[in-house]
Image (tube, rainbow, N blue to C red):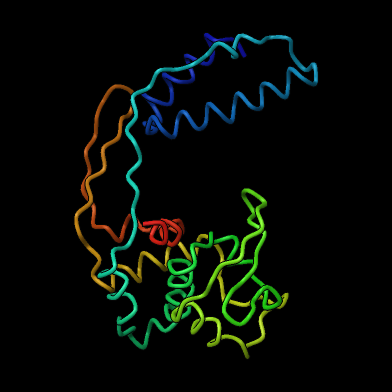
Length: 213
């Protein structure tokens, strides 16, 4: 694909699809990776895209994490009888917050990786070998599920990525974590400012971010 075609595609994303600039840049990155592969395999000899570096305005992504007070709200939340499925979701969420594990690492955590007061993992992203000390909360959560059999000897009842994302928003809303959060983003050259309650910004990354904060 020639540079002119990429410029037309960029304008299409901005003017027609109305993608955030940050999202559009991510798609361009995927496309350039594919085009580099096509050149390497000699499916094309057009390399104009190498010089295509669109200058789109974007803002630094806001880092969302739970405060100590918000964690207490989640821990002490009385979950309604019709939403008991959120109890396991809360346990996994708190485990992420108190260990700093990524969602994928908790999903694959096996009982064989757990010692008395620590757990040992090979990180998926960096392949580092880590030993993580367990505190009172994280140890109590593991003990709670120690006698419940899960597939592949997993240690925790971690559900799918999408459902977990949906349910932790629901959990945070029930806990009334609704502080207004302002988000600023650009679509093309146009600036947008939106205000949403904090629970709408909660994602699976919040556990690790809370731990680091």
